[in-house]
Length: 437
Image (cartoon, one colour):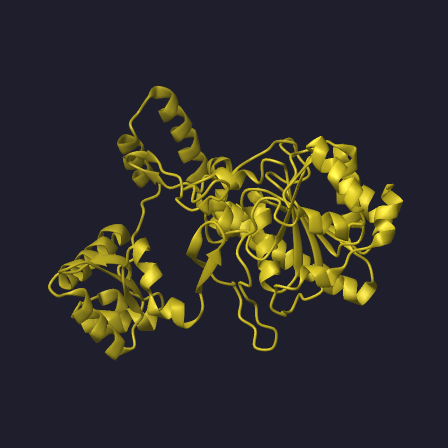
């Protein structure tokens, strides 16, 4: 069957919604050509909302199926927590028949979510230009590493590389330590979901789709929004420190020496009433950010702080003064247990909380009470806990309707939906260009 025949057959939306709870995106048809984190997590957000998300996978599956702890033959944790509620079709995109199938799906889709390697979409005829010619209503979301323009636009990139590129990785005396969580990927997924929703709203008003770009680079800059303006040249120290740092690396100086010199250029002032503090039996987090909260915290702890009681007070050495007050706060907190202090902070109406281990969050009553964590059952893995839908709606609730699909679990159904007769599907199976049931 030719490509025109596939398109004429259309897509049976209802067949993709039989397992999904009705939500705000019920009836929305999405084709996801993504792997790893950003594009798949974005697709999962829409699947939670009831959209029919068809995940296009290679015959070997999304690379994330092999990342992290492997729970079964083709299921790893890093796949299962970003792909629930979708349908999977496994095919060989280099095969012309498979390309026609994907184009047919895209020509009838509302949204495409992609993170192709640079130039791959154009080579396969699956880029926005090719698809929008036949489907001008499509919202085509493209996720890249460094953005569509500039000298690095054609370079691939992963979260770790973007952490290095933007300097977001913390500098410690033991060296640069990458952030444990892939912050660029997840932030990009959220930005892409917001962008798609915005583009769909625009389409409702105008009838026209459009292409949108979200990069990992932009995502990390969003996370650095608080600090970007502080490192501009107007602060006076930035260029001097950058030049020193480059030379220090070249000279083989230790990170301890580099950190010490950094303090002479721009000392780090740790807030006196904001951060993590030790107690008699653990840690407590205090978030007294405003002046009124700082005053009440000082009163609660019995700290004599002239900067809070004397208007216009300016210490001779702000670094020494602030560190001295913080030392008093710390010394006071060490005299009692975390639970005792939390009771006093709560009674005073001050923001404070216990510092908990990441492993403890799975037992957090607050998370379960709000459905922030959910339990799902997977055919090959069994029961598992994942993060629940990110936003709660009163009228059109999101739901973790079904677990992440097995590789190619819906291949036959989707090919039939795309208009292929059983004879063609069997021929493709015999040729080894599709996988699944």
